[in-house]
Length: 212
Image 1 (cartoon, rainbow, N blue to C red):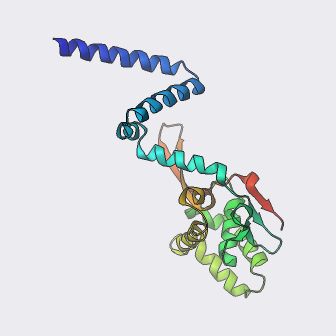
Image 2 (image 1 turned 60 degrees about the horizontal axis):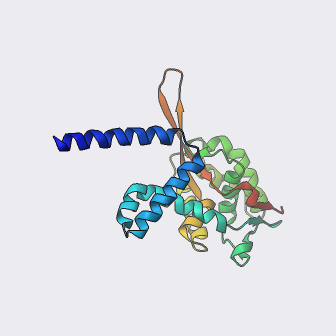
Image 3 (image 1 turned 45 degrees about the vertical axis):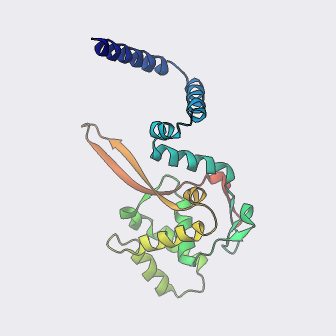
């Protein structure tokens, strides 16, 4: 009997709490989370705090916290990629990697790999500018491989770009600079869901400085 009463009371409390939270603004919700988190930390219950937050959310928070430590990305007149806040170090990439990176910087909305062929001419022009000493036939062949959805060349190039940035910073900072995955959900008029599996660079564009 008491167990039933307790269960009913808890459900009623939880329901009321949810209703209250719905009526709060974001800052009020954040204040409650901060207060509860502080109490759990003081009680030494980091296990419960992690369970409440969840590991995926914690990873997102780490990435968000890294935003304050990002460096501008300076692209010089001769297409060097420099990071002023990391000792003005240069990101070591070949001309084709730089051309591919610039393509994705030009499209903050993201690009699906399967649709890269639609950006062939833009990528070709970028590669020609950066690799102006490379044979034109070689440039064309490389670009054709990259935009071919049956070729793994695009994944290899993205892995190399990721490695170049990851060698210079921690994984949470690097998450902003690499070519990342982003799934965009769409709902059609027939209520049918479909998804775009986009690739994007999350770096805020105000941090990209073009000198070229």
